[in-house]
Image (tube, rainbow, N blue to C red; front, side, top):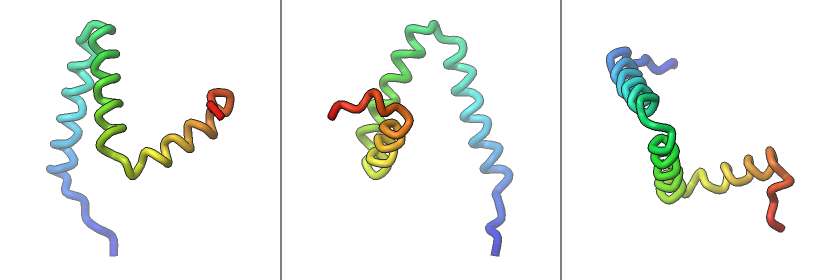
Length: 68
């Protein structure tokens, strides 16, 4: 059976993401890069289960960056 989507929740998530994107677009580039670095570090630290898969994907996409 197909799970029904909650349209109100989907729209709320869309609005939050759209507001965040708009806020980042208004920032000076240096601030946006700093924010991106902080978010990347946070996700790397918190989402350990996906880290291995992400690193394997980067190695496959950019084999010249491998530090063997």
